[in-house]
Length: 421
Picture 1: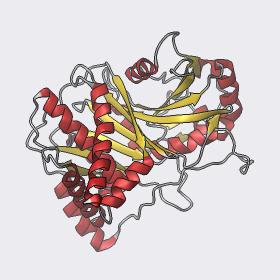
Picture 2: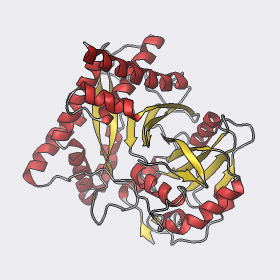
Picture 3: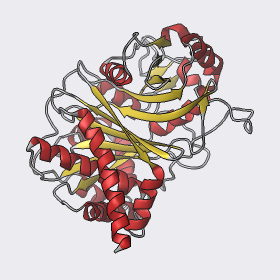
């Protein structure tokens, strides 16, 4: 049996009566396969993803995965309740729990997602896979095999990361941790004790528009800078509409530590993060974008994410208890406001059972005292955003999602105007 990593165990341990540990991909299809077709499709492909055939070992002295075993696919692949729309299905899925006596994943078919479409709501426990790993699994388990790839292996390109080492790394680690542990003035309006309910919202935009914004705003502005600035615009609009103070918001941005090379396809979680302060008090969207870009460039230059990854890894080796203390400290609402992730998805057209995938969304669980989480994922020429909230603490989930679309449109118009001038 393969032992879980310390990070995977920590994700299992974070679950409580109000917090779940899974993530979710929502695959919107043009057309509607039957649930029996989906079951047969998944059953045929399960050997490609052995971890989806493994369960948590019971009675083992340490957390471990069992050896792969036959899976009762009917227990994992189901039809969503009749008449339930997609937003309700995702909200229910993110409010629920995965059965720990079985492999930690399931999939529901929403037969009517509107406009002749259906959707697959696929949950996987975060202890099994991070965002990059889950995208690789989607290519193995769900996407139809492209004609040019008989083996069926279509691997989403991992985000490269160079781990730091030596004296220079130590110096960067000190600087990085000092900045990462700099507290906010207050938790702001996006905080509070998390309940058990979740609400899902959807936003999408043209990836070409996002690229045009980046190119038009100046050298070095990335797609992720535009994503973060769009989130800042949405948070600003929400605060104005709710009479909340525009005191700034710090977001936690996951950074993949999966690297090119022999261990690029490692399972489990290999994530670090960096904090980015969003200037939601700034009324000019282009000024917000340039401020975000300045900060992300500084963080990348100092290798903040790699330094945090290194120091937490070192702590785990020499003082495992200290890792839990550090993680609790880093989850303090005074450290950051919400988590915003961005994972690259398929770059070319994909399908499931012959039905084109027209939209792809990612949702990740909120955290204790952090009732909003936003996840972005690209698909061909579009960018999709999954917005998840605790609606008892933060109302207006659909408005937050619509605010992202409005912020992208505003940025696109401002860039166009600046070039006409």
